[in-house]
View 1: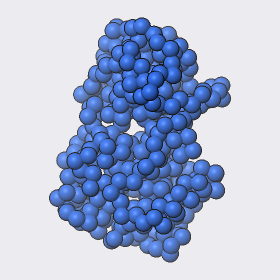
View 2 (view 1 turned 180 degrees about the vertical axis):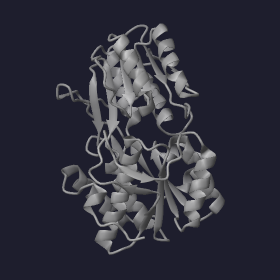
View 3 (view 1 turned 90 degrees about the horizontal axis):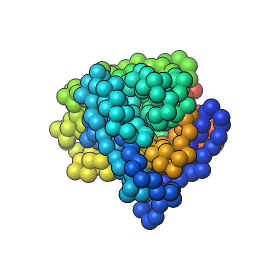
View 4 (view 1 turned 90 degrees about the vertical axis):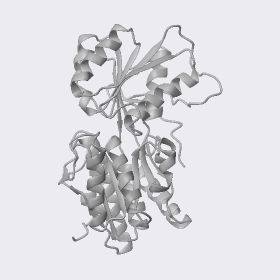
Length: 364
């Protein structure tokens, strides 16, 4: 299993590459600072969503593990109207860095950063348009690892049908799905197969973090597990045996649907390793298309703690460990894993495209 251990923070504003940090229990790599507090405002999925909110909070805990003098705290948002008040509450508490989680927090984070340019912020899955130089956008090219997940699911599917759905049609969600479809199409092209993908159709043009066109099944939020279970059951009824939910805690409904459908049905998880975040359900996870939220959040906290924080944008890729395919209970053979390792190198070098429109679609 590939671990998110080393990575670079790439600042788009100055093209400066900060030194990679290794997260380890054995000794701090940073100087001690008294009274330092790192705080996180979650999206509506909550701190225990077993996805991106939980991953971001784990990043705070990892930073504290490196240096126990770092104080950490969180506030959960029950609705979008909680974002700004939660941020203000942490500002009043004197948090040295505030982490906000998700695209939906763009406006609240931007407003707070503009109002107080000295307050340090990092935001997961977004690059806000702000005048402040103290905002670090944490973004991830997850279509790279999702391509590998699509290839894996296509290769291990017994029915020749897989599916994906999203929480909301944001570019950060569609990027996962676009890469997934590309991986399935690439598998079909290389293996003369006809594995179908239900739930998402890529639009014309390349998928970027700013714009990733596509249409399909979207729940409309990241909390409705009942809807996730219903949509997954529908995909299973249509012949799919592996479903890839890109929907935060909604995806737990997909796990419940797989359990109900029984053997031969599984889920490819997203964001944080499914067998780590939800050990009890590990056997239902074929694999995880992970993003390096934990280490990138930890690095942001540690840089602020050391007095070296700089705003800009961090781009997570396969090459720097910002996204990865992690095998869970998959039946993938050693040969298939070797093929996927070769695909990884091809994507990293740019020789293999993760644009689904570069490959022929499988006829319905």
